[in-house]
Length: 63
Image 1 (cartoon, one colour):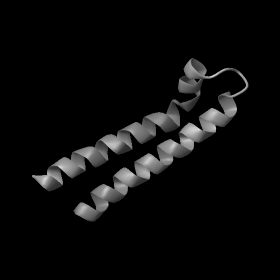
Image 2 (cartoon, rainbow, N blue to C red; image 1 turned 135 degrees about the vertical axis):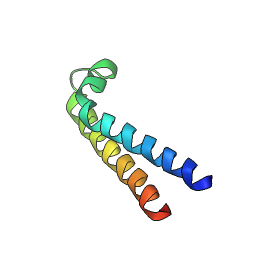
Image 3 (spheres, rainbow, N blue to C red; image 1 turned 90 degrees about the horizontal axis):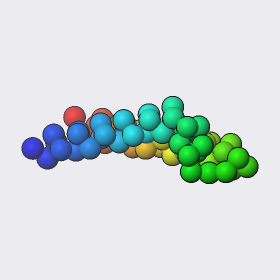
Image 4 (cartoon, rainbow, N blue to C red; image 1 turned 60 degrees about the horizontal axis):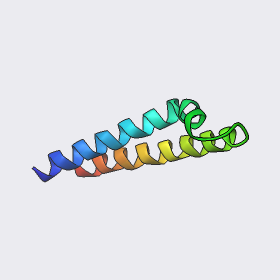
């Protein structure tokens, strides 16, 4: 049961990470001004990559 829960959490982390990577520009347009969009979108893409890698590692090491 514990492995199933951790796998689902890992899959959700991967999903959120991929969404952050591909929709970073759209998300930053909603929350930041024009001067901060490039830096904020880069930061969101990096955060999405790290989040998806953590989710993938959680799934990989619990199999």
